Image: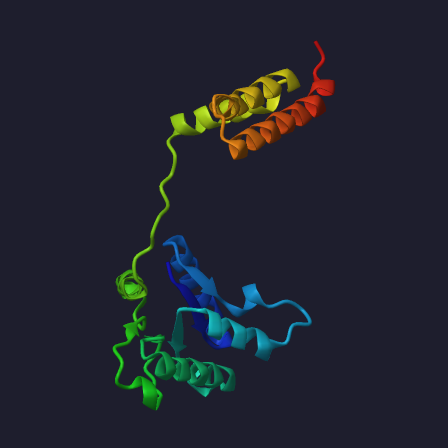
Length: 208
């Protein structure tokens, strides 16, 4: 799973929302300004933190975005990360025919100029973002068994909990009873005292 920052201008917001939804549906996390900022936040600080945390920055390139000072600033920060980390950080996505910024001209871009090829371009982008590790999901039978076990544990009376505690302690205490080593005898006495203390605390809760 990758964490992706969508660098875009306001006129491209509908496309950014659609792309963000598709990336999330495929298991990736997306940083998009409207979802990450609240009233009163410092936009510069929020955006800078977002750019520092993500794995990739998708540059949504259109006539509006290449003229946006905000987008230019975001791409400057992302390109510096790319240089410092010596890996691909910026993924250019072409929404319209534009003159690419200098540092993006040598990159292979995602072609989103034609809406008919959107799915193909999304597939190529997902391949660039890397695989998504899906955690194993328990089967319906396993979930049912877990729920039953949890309900049984929650319904157990103090007496049953006391018996379970005694069963857990018994092997440790018994293993020490037959030992004559002075240190072991001291440990035996300690465990016996500890067991008695715990049992005394629990017994008042037991109503027969």
